[in-house]
Amino acid sequence: MSVIQYQGTGRRKTSVARVYLRPGKGTISVNKREFENYFPNPLHRMLIQSPLVMTSTLDKFDIFVNVQGGGSSGQAGAVRHGISRALLEYNQELRGKLKAAGMLTRDAREVERKKYGHPKARKRFQFSKR
Image (cartoon, rainbow, N blue to C red; front, side, top):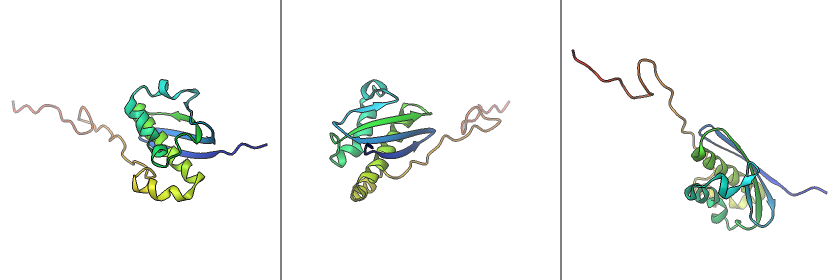
């Protein structure tokens, strides 16, 4: 007997999230921990649940997430992207809603590298005339 499962991979900054949706009651676990404990910031929790709220599937799926790399903001963005992709696998008709909200587009912004002769990527050392 096989379990119906929908999978999506999300990326943001240096974070990668593997998301698995299974029919259930709406529980979310991230790295085998409770959703509220892994993401204590309510803004991140809202960001992650936004594709589910938009498509009215918040209480239809149990969500299991494995996320690695980056910080909490990048990980939250990666999970959101992964959930959106997994929802597409579940129902292709949700594409219009998710696409219009920009949830299927991978946020390509990355950290700019540090340049030599500078303390940071763009910051300069203080100029001294004498």
